[in-house]
Length: 238
Image (tube, rainbow, N blue to C red; front, side, top):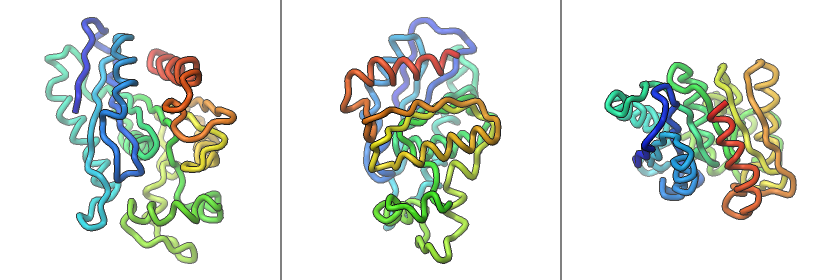
């Protein structure tokens, strides 16, 4: 993991742990360096991590990826006092697949994670909203590898529910970014989590961007600099 500590920050400043995307089986922390540098300029302590990538052969699923987030937190907690920071005072910021595991880890560990930020994150692998959608037709082969269980619409395993952030929501404030023309992570994924958070009265905000596809910070400088990065910063500081 790469640790960026600005010269000045408050002792109670949360540490933003950054989790890269890549369909669970690709990607690396360097893909998130632009966000890490941006937060550094605004005096936000950050930890940018790698994690084990999903592999059927190696029997690595999202569960091992959750474990790796936990291990990264455990390691940084050890040095937090030296950095004059509080342990277990994290904001998880994930993109795409990294957003999925960030949401899941955060909702399951609210004693460690104070806020969540999801950039184009999948949220639902088990409701009709997903299973009856066109999106599930082409994404389910990947999802069954991520979960480590066969995706059978007629007899869907409970493990797909366990892997879905919408089924694990706890009272962790959540910022969501979702594009309306995202074909890699269907727009209803973000909208569904937004709905569940509203039902459970969890503090949250949905930034729903029109004429926007997957991970727009890579493809639109305007949206990145005028919408995405400022909203991330506002959420961290609020």
